[in-house]
Length: 184
Image (cartoon, rainbow, N blue to C red; front, side):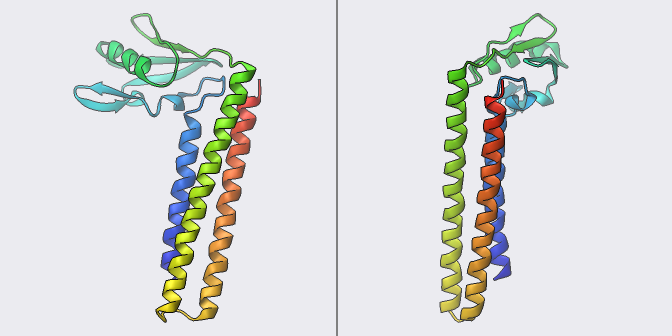
């Protein structure tokens, strides 16, 4: 039974990590190189992350500087950024690409905060679905006679504690990202 519980915990951990990855893509007024993580550039027919093709730095609070190692890739990097859902127009001066992040309006901040909460709630639902599957597995295992009723109760309690732990972690992530977005 321990192995099965570990499998379910692994699923919960993956769900939490997915949420954290999604939050990294949400920009909060400050330039963060992680917003480029999802963008892939067609480099000789291979979708390649920008970080593998260029040096990405943050010279100012609201600016990213992308310095490609191969100058011939400037246009494809610029095009990949333009076609992404980043919503920022890159400035290409021939040697570097600058991404200037505009100051977020109060309405946009509130909209982003709502989106963060919605994604957090969706992830909590996913965690609870994993718990439901685990509880069904525990009951089936007990009915099959593989574990006793006492072991079933203990496994169900462990599963509930695990669920509570991951829901609390999600709440913490939501709170931190919301605070980051609403901070001017």
